[in-house]
Length: 625
View 1 (cartoon, rainbow, N blue to C red):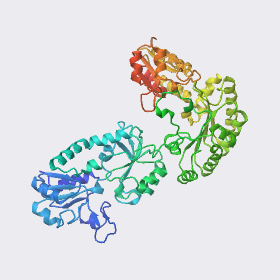
View 2: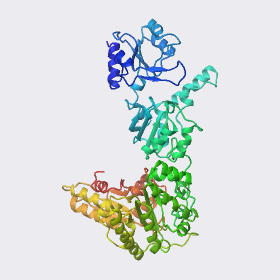
View 3: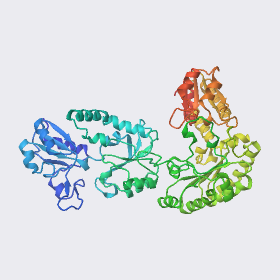
View 4: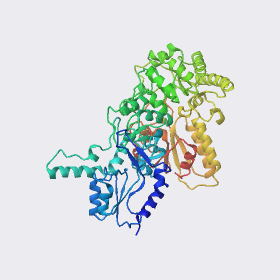
């Protein structure tokens, strides 16, 4: 039978050697986990001593019990059930944890030993992060030098996609439903509706936000451990991609200073959109949301222009609803990068394009961010007759002088739903060629002066101009790929690298790739090359955009309805491949609210969703996905 000293050795091993070995560890300051905690209330300090608090090391342990906090009730229950060793998480203080009498008297009458671990155990076990659905990439048990100030920063596990997933996970693992049933039963049995249960009253909840809001990275803290608004501010600087603040064990309620600080920093509890999503106040001449088809889901009509989402999610913003105080906070916290929808730097022209007087005034923010060393990436939506030609030249020169890191030039997108909107003309072949020549000429000057081209035309412009795509080196590690700059070249390069690794034929069923009109020639070429190398047959079908109008030719705006209407009755082979950008981020829903399963049912073939990755495309073609 194990002895008390064996249990102690096990705890020492479990905590990585943090338990007390003898009097010298406690009195001599050798053990950093021996900590005196005090709120400066005279006589009320407590010394944490991880390990054996009371008991004979040679005593045999018949039965052991674990509790959060040792109390008089715990001692009595242990004695009544044959337990002779108690392991308490929280520190044990003489009299405070033994019914007001000395531990040696109370535990002595029952022959009990007791252990405490607390700070020695913190950070050594993945249980708390796992319970809360994340894997820590950072952990501290004494953040900012405060013993017990526990902080995790973690990436959510695959099962957690949204805030609602987190709440459901906690309710399930904590068995909240059973606690609710037990509470109802006790109230009914005792005839008292005033009875409360902590696990029910203080259950997990969303302070601000919606259950469907996505989660990726959390700052996980414990409010009762000394965590302050200043700590939150520091953590945001250290982990700017964190999108959710999670408070556990103790609670934070509305009105707490942490809530105010979180809102100020662009974070809030249990929501990536912080407090309320900040809508765009502009009326841009080219706004795509204004050209949306009627009858779509509400979220597609929401225009965000939120600086917080710029550095958290990479969204492009105009800066027109940014206040001077918020701009100064960005500078003070050195939050980077900020992604800016520039479009023009002539104040009057920018105000006209954005439909807002603040369009011209907010140019000063760009200058200020540049002076402060804030990394800025830009975007120019090219509207022929407005911001091309000399205006485009001025914009590029100003942005380079203000210190922009990079900028994409993309053609305006025009749908068939423009009734009542400003008259704009699409970018045609001639205009696209002129713009590419102008941008590449200025880019060459920037390359010579700054070591970077800084300005890049999107793939769409090269396709409309009928030009070959630039080689891979042109794109400088694809700094603007999220704006469609180099996306096709990256796909091709990855596909070619994967194809070189293929060493023979593959046994896979025929397939069809559905894509937008503009990408079809490129994908057909890749399908042909894959067939030559592996023998797998495939075809590529361009889907005309009947939903938005035929001026829209990109794959990302193809709807499920158009897929079904144009592919039904065709020989699609045994499977259909579609690009992931046809679907809502992280989901399986098309822009018209149809789902992948709806397309599969209608066409009678399984659908494979292909990531924006040449390797994944090849794997899908040869049937390995």
